[in-house]
Image (cartoon, rainbow, N blue to C red; front, side, top):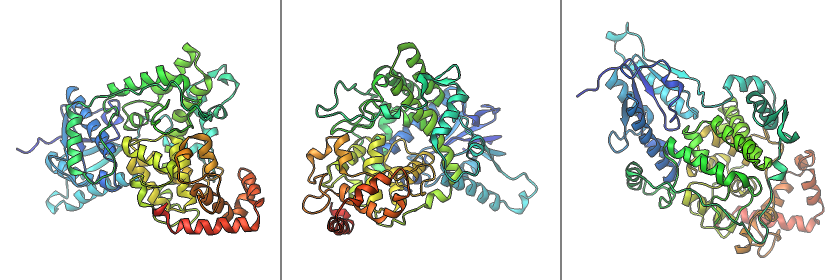
Length: 527
């Protein structure tokens, strides 16, 4: 039996699971139909981690049930039922079934997805025969995504024509706009930013009194999705044995409450530190729920501030967390839409080496990379320093093509949506956009990793050795990178000191680094 026609088809994407979405404004469950599509391409356009696919599909199926309970008719095109290859396929089929007057949706956070949807509707219009020429053409109505606290027009006005952008000034504006951590018109504690207090390592004793993360037992929906993914995406990277991410708003709220009560008090101190076997530490683990829109950023910020006000929590920890949500997250989203499509192909250094195969397996003798990648494959997660200063930093100094590494980041993390992943990776981790919003490349030698972790103690390489037997690739490639870009870095106040250290090396040592680096770069897959 053919589905009944409808007035509007409300397209809800997999990262738009917001019951208060603008997509529902002014629409009527009696006349309009919600469309949700599980498309195979969304897991294959990059080689997606199994846990990423499970999270999206399970959360979508739970959200569809919630909408049905609220009285909405939901046209749900499941991967194991309709089997749509692309979002466009599913949308074209649904439009044929329901004959809507228009399609309504919230602007996607991935420009590839938006283009695919618009192309699908254009193909529908082009396929109309002459008998329908006088009928109104099917149109797409995009609505602004009010999940975010800074609208795109507001961000564009703030950015203006500036060649360089700095998150710190944007963050201060947002603090003032939403009156967050403000006392009598001034920042709480007298400073805007306490980042300098949040960079401590663990020392020799390692992490102490680490809170255990919550456990979300998979229900029947999630178990069904896990079985589906294991069947249809068997060759994809990642493990599902430890899948433990919130897939409903109720679970996301529990996760938020757990973080505020048990990990926020000590969040800041060691947020940059790493340790073997420490997968989560005091990190919030809320990014996937925020990016699926199961949580609203303002409720997250207010919960943290309320804990600071009522319980006297450490201001550096609370401010550091709020800065990530109210500042960095909103800033990065603005940068994405401001700088696309150029950001997608940015390659400031002209790097062109292929991504080593061990990025997908963790099978490398570099213990820092092995630990971070293995953790990522197990959980679909690693924290920001593991992403920036281990897997990302190596990508810069190893001259890996930025797009290959950007695709890897989009594939392997459960919280990855292009609007947040691409600027973070291409812009911050890889400096591929030439410093549009960062003042220097984030590079360091193996000494940094030794200071911030215990990874070096279990490694085949020696972090203090620049060349010769046991030379650490992180160290060798770092000094080689400085050597290659000495002139540019000498003129940057943020990198001048690095160059001065480089210039203290003897000519023979610099040549030793160059030769060692060349051998390593030609054999990245064997490191």
